Length: 374
Image (tube, rainbow, N blue to C red; front, side, top):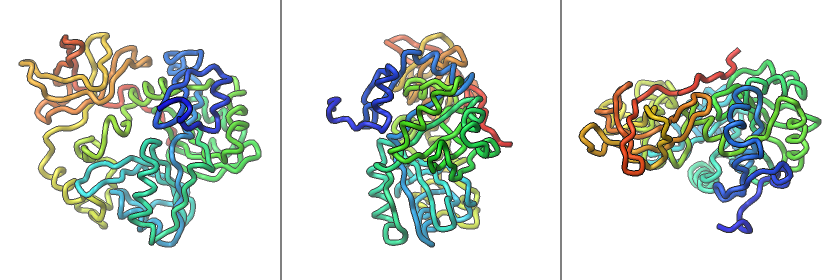
């Protein structure tokens, strides 16, 4: 894909003005880093506040009396009882229990839901919704009308509070309409870094002005995709298409926590989502492989695709995400392992350029999460 055919977010000109190095990502021309550099951008976000352009993500609105019930038929999440002003993490599953995408679902009103889906999946997600529940509710694509900014880090509440004091009282996963710098936005207290912070949905025409207003605050630096990836990796957060896909189920991906209590096998509305029987069977019987955290025991980054072997050299898994964790000061990775080798502290080896690198199965997150829960 050439630069000419890549889509651009509403902040594209601002990224160039700020000296960003641009790369293709999910069909968009996106900033991978700014002059500060990935390492310093990562550490700045952990220490103060970083502003991310995530406008390539897909935003979708569902409306109608049956919207919640309809969406619940596609995800293993309790949508019917989701209160107005809250959002939940959800998964689209297929008939085999495979993960089609992960998404955030917020309740704007009794009859209105707001979804944020992954950039690379947004066209197929919209088509999936239209095909499966289009007759039950109104589905509105906001792909071209709204941008999305993420303000992340311990100073995020102070910074955004200068524009709208009420956001400081919000707690993790709360969602509300907020007026920022004279513009009507949707704000959630959430993010993809493990830090406290906010995601802000803003009309396209106002995105540049809002981004500049936030960047004008002394605590804020622009942050690119490079640091976004290392931050989410330290936080143990999955990236769709790498750490999960239609070839993995929520059980294999260690995401059973994302199956709401009401939708579990013993829940009040058990099942009813695609692949439920397969998922419940795996929960009962166990799985042959599962996603785990991995800590390389040498200062050698272990990248996606590296084979994982046991003491005898037999292949027992593969790394799905890996790199250096600047806050940890050490390499970190996520990978799929045969269940027999997936216990905490179990020693395994990654094969990196023909050499074995010792690793230990570890708990995630690798760096403590600091979500604001009040």
